[in-house]
Image (tube, rainbow, N blue to C red):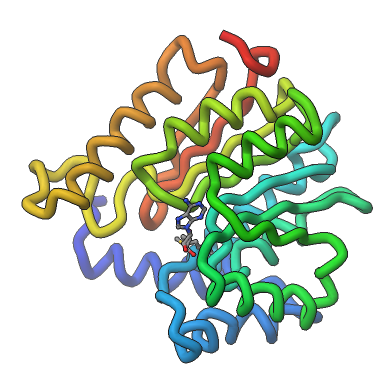
Length: 240
Ligand SMILES: C[S@@+](CC[C@H](N)C(=O)[O-])C[C@H]1O[C@@H](n2cnc3c(N)ncnc32)[C@H](O)[C@@H]1O
């Protein structure tokens, strides 16, 4: 069956409707979060509901013996939409650290975490992704995290991944959004916009490294929406 633009649009609508919502108590909040964030002036670039549900599922199996993640980190909070999904997959007592440099985004997200009764489980750090990962490494030590989600600056994914390699325990999961596209698409000809082209090239290099034999990860790309790379750390933290 060929994928036409019409079929792709219908597929995305189906995915969102069927594989997005989970049910109360917090679905009412999640269902309106992206709309309310856009009305508050935040960019409308959160993950889709079906990707949110997938993040929850992956976080719920990222801990030892397939249990939920005990310690997770997300780069790129925006309004807190993906963070709330990830937090639903944590182990009992588990915590998510989410990182956001924009005060307006962070303020909105913090309000959502409180409204969802999740503020004790989600720690919002106002800062830059790479610096915060380095700080978490110093605070918690190598191999201390079960789950890492990358959704910040696309051209910095390689830097994030190098730090995440040290932060993740062997068996932990690295998940990266936009590994196929954003305003650019991975298989398109070079983009006329230099920023888009920088991101496209950086993501191609990141994908090839992650999928290659030296990364220390076993990985696959889920080709829904803009592409989600899912990788399990198989080498000890900090190697190769
Ligand atoms: C695609 S949005 C994140 C969407 C969010 N994960 C969701 O699905 O709900 C990217 C976010 O990364 C933030 N950001 C920008 N530069 C960053 C950096 N250096 N480190 C961490 N986050 C950054 C942006 O302000 C923006 O809120």
